[in-house]
Image (tube, rainbow, N blue to C red; front, side, top):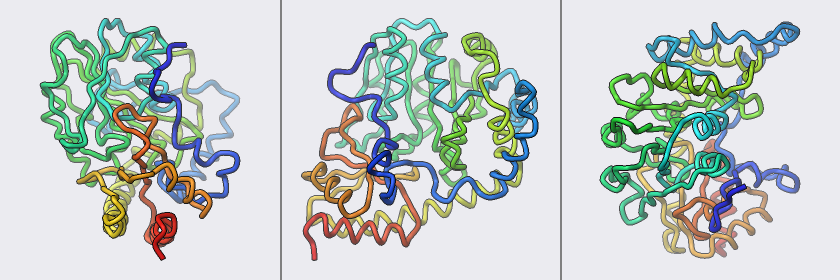
Amino acid sequence: MRTDPGHDLRHHGDAEVRDDGAELVDLAVNVRADTPPPWLREHIAASLSGLAAYPDGRAARAAVAARHGLPVERVLLTAGAAEAFVLLARALEVRRPLVVHPQFTEPEAALRDAGHSVDRVLLREADGFRLDPAAVPEDADLVVIGNPTNPTSVLHPAASIARLARPGRTLVVDEAFMDAVPGEREALAGRTDVPGLVVLRSLTKTWGLAGLRIGYVLAAPETIAELERAQPLWPVSTPALAAAEACVATGALAETARAAHRIAAARSHLIAGLREFTGHGLRVVGPAAGPFVLVRLPHAATVRRRLRALGYAVRRGDTFPGLDEEWLRLAVRDRETTDGFLSALGRALGRG
């Protein structure tokens, strides 16, 4: 397996809350708390009566297509967005793939595992981790970027991302957290006028379905056909298909929209509390748009260990290319949980 010499690309937030971290208050994983809701659990449970039959994804695929105003030929259902990254790495013929960092590391890991040499564009803290399309080399024929980006929580303008499109280039936009943005502003999902555009969506974050594995790809029909040929038969289970269909229904979309506004308010409360620690050298990357924030803090690794001892798990940042051990990512939680965390952070920093 080809590995990155400087960063653990396979480290994810769930590692912080496994084994001895199972009892910690979780600010490391970006799945929305208190999910899935009861109605969705009941809907998924009802699908179990059909487990004797092979999965039939036609209804779920049609529902996702309708949700984005697309024909079904532009939709591929996957076992979470992670499967989509593997399919893209293995199925598409590319010569010079490039990943815009810092961002979710699984796309680069999948490309490396498929034997590709991967170039990087590292966005800078001094620029607010914002995209400059001119920084991407013209000969990159596959470009991957997240929006809003994990872990920076930066929401790039859709127009800036669209400027990366070129004839002969596949432009992959990971919108796994876009449904946590009120109004999904800057979304490219549903666009058919951007050449080579591939948009990835996940239903695991907002709906708490990480253990079920469901996501989808939106792309041109010929790209969808290439990716589908690389999938095994029946890649998405019957319960996951039931969840997909339910989560893009009108009522569920309205619930998602309400949750996005709650997340925005909770994030503002977290950021306001974090700014009380600027005297300790803490800096928050902003403006943040996702259900998480990125902070820089001297001796962050020590602070993270102290927080664990106080009962709180946060995501280390040094496994993301472009970041180092002074960075932490914090998931947005409800006001009560955030207040408890801020109190613990004060103790970890030696205040009070």
